[in-house]
Amino acid sequence: MSAVVKFKKRLGAFSLSVDFEAENEVLALLGGSGCGKSMTLKCIAGIVTPDEGRIVVDGTTFFDSSKGINLKPQQRRTGLLFQNYALFPNMTARQNIMTVFEHGGVRCADREERYLDIARRFFITGLDDHYPSQLSGGQQQRVALARIMASDPAIIMLDEPLSALDSFLRWQLEQNLSRILGEYTGTTLYVSHNRDEVYRLCDRVCVINQGLSEPVKDVGEFFDAPATITAAILSGCKNFSRAERTDERHILARDWNMSFECSRDVPPEAKYVGVRAHYIMPMEKPEEGNVMSADILEIKEDIFSTVVTVAPEGTAGESNFAIVRLELPKEKAENYSAGERIFLKIEPKDVMPLLA
Image (cartoon, rainbow, N blue to C red):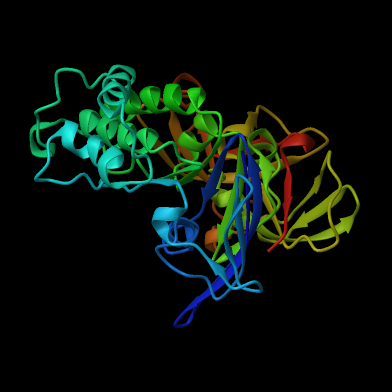
């Protein structure tokens, strides 16, 4: 099963323009709040109509403005899971699932057998007569996913399904979700702003930046070499400087007063440079290469590491860009104190030239 999604939608001053394809995979739609992730799913599901473009899923054209095609939501066979799971509060778990067989597009004579099979697969047996208010968050998620899978969807779309949960429950439900998505043979779109979920659950990533989709990347490539500063922020990078290319393998970080050698080509359009906090290594003394001299501003213990913030020599932390953060094992951080001069090594492979 495949999905071809290319459309534009304007809502007041906000413009959404997306262009991506996915096939038999879990594709993450990653972006900040209000960037258009949820709106993209609603357009695919038929809840919102795009202004122009084309949406084709599993060979069926859901929407094509040039041909006047716009299927109703119930004709699209989309399985859309909202953050709050959207279960009918006045129906039991069984009734919620049975609505698919009785009123949806999967009317069938053997619906009792279908229900029992779904209940077994999603570990709902024994919860049949419970109402949503009587179910835990994990049980509600399983019922909602069971209802979606019972509809035999051509595409599954999950809108931040784990965002409202505490960390322990989120981990438990993520394991359950991973198993379900692993068994599904079609395309799944996974909306999130959580990079850790995306890394563990998804195959590829499409960043939506202020209503505009960026080219799709493999998960490994996205985290190793994000192309833009927005993608780098979403991938978890915390250190950035305004920059300019000096040649194809060197970039000048203006906010850090530092020229870096890069192991990857520096695009002529590069406007920023990024370095991840856990790739910056303290040195006992300066040496040749990408070594930065800096003054320690603050040392703070985190749960499992220590966060050290520094100001590169000559900057005095005069802007947000000039502050550099590194994360060290607690035993290594014990050797340093605020006000101390420190030397920091950054390998060429860890320097990320970034477009605006």
